[in-house]
Amino acid sequence: MIHCWLSEFPAKDLINLCEPVVQDALIHAKELASNKVYRHRTKLVTELAAYPCMATLLDVLVPAVHACITQGRDKLTPRQQLAMGLLERHIDENDTLYQGYMKVLDLLGAMTDNYAANMAREISGVGIL
Figure 1 (cartoon, one colour):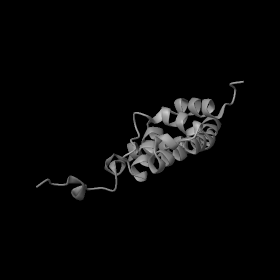
Figure 2 (cartoon, rainbow, N blue to C red):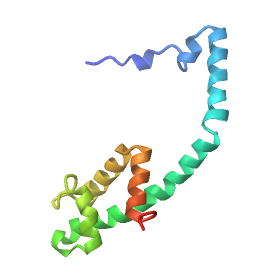
Figure 3 (cartoon, rainbow, N blue to C red):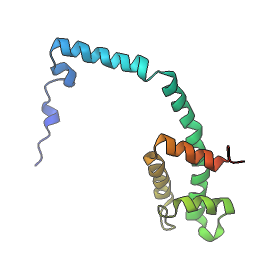
Figure 4 (cartoon, helix red, strand yellow):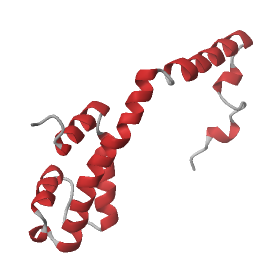
């Protein structure tokens, strides 16, 4: 039997186990990060830009996966065939829709911000012509 030490943890979190001076410094650092770093303009712009990037990628990949799994690769439109070319190693026609969608989400979740942004830009055609 595995003993779970979390049920015996003596405090709400690690900060509560620190000396008061250290607690104050850590709490101040968390507030500073929340108010200055995570709310900095470049961070906000990056987060806002992620929404259309993800939408672009999902709008292309999800319908291709759906068509591939429900209709088969031989019935894909030319655009869906191209999209499946990006997913060939990941999606199998024997996958369920759930598995296919989860594989797309896993793939997108593993992308760095820059990689996802570049792929979305390439897929949308922005800046190509």
